[in-house]
Amino acid sequence: MIIVFMGPPGAGKGTQAQILQENLQIPKLSTGDMLRAAITAGSEVGKKAEALMKNGDLVPDEVVVGIIKERIIQADCATGFILDGFPRTINQAQALDKMLKDNNLIVDKVICLDVNPDIIVARQAGRRIASKSGCVYHVEHNPPKVPGKCDVSGEDLIQRDDDKEDVVRHRLEIYADTVKPILEYYESQSLLHNVKGTSSVEAVKTEILSIINQK
Image 1 (cartoon, rainbow, N blue to C red):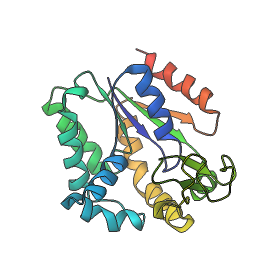
Image 2 (cartoon, helix red, strand yellow):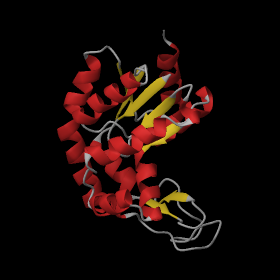
Image 3 (tube, rainbow, N blue to C red):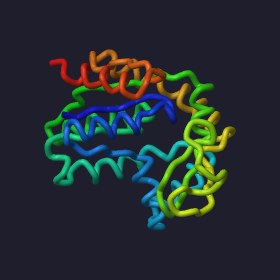
Image 4 (cartoon, helix red, strand yellow):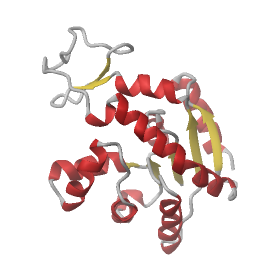
């Protein structure tokens, strides 16, 4: 089974894709995670992506498509995979269909989480990261015991550049400009399922699993 998760940045795609990964026992492929790994590794792809991601801009299609193309032919994707954060443009959607067709595969379901932009800004801009321990906090919804310090390691918490409010709003503007044709593209193939992302994590999970289990 091949599932595409869509929705604005910060809508909860990563959380729900992780839950679905555990239920279906297939890998979750996050372009954001793969690009950040490339940045950390200092690869050519990482160097190209770093400046763009800091400003909230989209990484060029050919870079993202290349990463996905290399990933889906690996052994752990043999029984399916979940795409989180891809495709983000109509060209990427078409490129995905082509690369799947070349491997005798198709997209089975497209799940789109719908969340108000102001809610997303509040979610993202309040997020803080502990780079060493990997713990994630939120200044309002999941604050550390000591402000600005990780509960586990005691290290200083940081705000990622792409979590800053102006960058988040810029990313949402880009998303709004690019998503409509993608949704129409998948809707024309009867693949699109919209899910209200502001419900509880458990309620969203239940609805998504119901959709996945439909024939």
